[in-house]
Amino acid sequence: MVGGGVAVDTDDAAWVVDTGPFAHLARAEWLGVLKMLAPGGKVIVPDAVQRELRTGAEKYRSLGDVLKQDWISIRVLNSDAELESFARYARRLVGDDGRNIGECEVLALAEVHGFTPLIDDGAACKAAKQKGIEPLRTLRLLCNAVTQNLLTVDTVSAVADDLLATNYRIPVEPGGFRRWASENGLLVHPASV
Image (cartoon, rainbow, N blue to C red; front, side, top):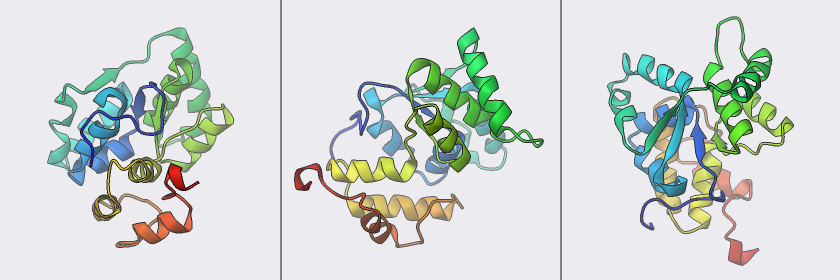
């Protein structure tokens, strides 16, 4: 594994992170991997995601102090462009139960500022792609880290298993990361292509 602050599969664009990846990596005690892989070792968390994480801290103490880290910037949507973008995503993604507000803020910031959204929600990823935004999913991020020799397959397998232990919905079974990634062609090293 290579030292921290190395960008994976992005240019110099910042990452704006949704609640799912952030909370589950924190609960699984792998949040340091996110810091290590993020461009410049920093991520942006929208205000709605911050609120969701604070609410989650009532149930999961591991989320309590996470937002106090100096490598995490909280961003409140306030420009007209951000708010208009948010409203478009909200009309599409937010249901009667108020779910997906965080995803909408992540996508609004990504759209307006060119940030890379780290997001796993299927509907949000589809909405992003329809606007020409390429979302970065947690398992893709981890596969990229393997192909760039930043993490080992064994390490990422452990991360995936620990994410599953937090009930995170990722498309692998316990102990099945290597097989899933190989079947999906996600562990091809650039030199071997």
